[in-house]
Length: 264
Image (cartoon, rainbow, N blue to C red; front, side):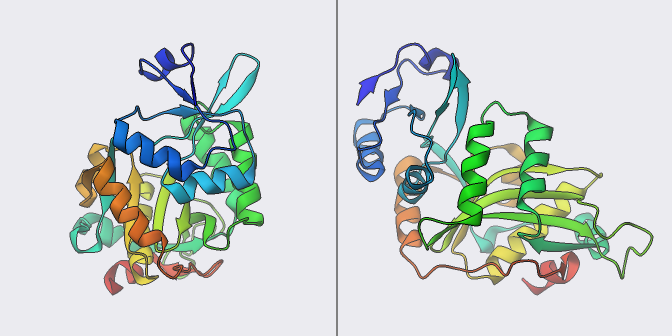
C-alpha cells in the first residue's frame, strides 16, 4: 500500500493509503484497526466485484473526481452511527403523517439514486460509482450482498388526491447478511424524509436485520435513537451480522407506512 499525498488534504487527512485491487479489503480493515489509520483510502479500481468485497469488509464505498478521472474512496469510519431496534424513536407527529404514505422496495432504483445525487450533488456519489451501484442492484456478484432502493409514495387509499406514482422520498443502501447500511437519501415534500426513515426502520426490523448502519454520525440519526460506535465496536458488530443468514427485503410490495411503524 502506497501513500497518496496529493488527495489527502482534500479529505482532511495527513495521508491517504492507495489500495491496489489485489490486496484483500479484509486485511486492509484489520490493518486500519490495528494501526489506527485514517478513515479514507483510495483506489482506481472501479469494478463491481471490488466494491462488493469492500462492502463485505465493512467499508462504505464513496468516490471523487480527481484530476482527469474518478477514484474510489472506501471509507472506514472512526465513528459509525448504528441503530438497534430497541432504541428506535418515532415522534408522534411523524406517526400521524405516515398514514398517507406507502413504502416500496426496489420499485425504481435508478430514479431513487438519481434523486439522491440531485439533492446532495455528486461529490462522493460520482457517475462512475452510480454505475457500479446500479450494476450491483441488477446483478449482484455476492449472493449475500444486495443494493436496494427504499421509496416513499402517496398511499392511494389515504391520499387519493395525490399521484400514487409520485416519488416523495427515498434512499439507496445495501444489505450484507443480516446488516443493512444506508448510503444516501432524499425528500421532495415536507416531512417526507422523516416518514421514510421511520417506516424504513420498521421495515428493516420486521425483515430480520440485526441493526441499521447509518454511516457518519449526524444529529438527526441520534434523534432516531442511533448510537456512535468506534471502529473496533462497529467492525465486531458488522462481522457478526454479515455472517448471519441474509435478511430479505420483498421487492415492489407496497405497505402503508403507518401500519409498518405500528407493527414494530
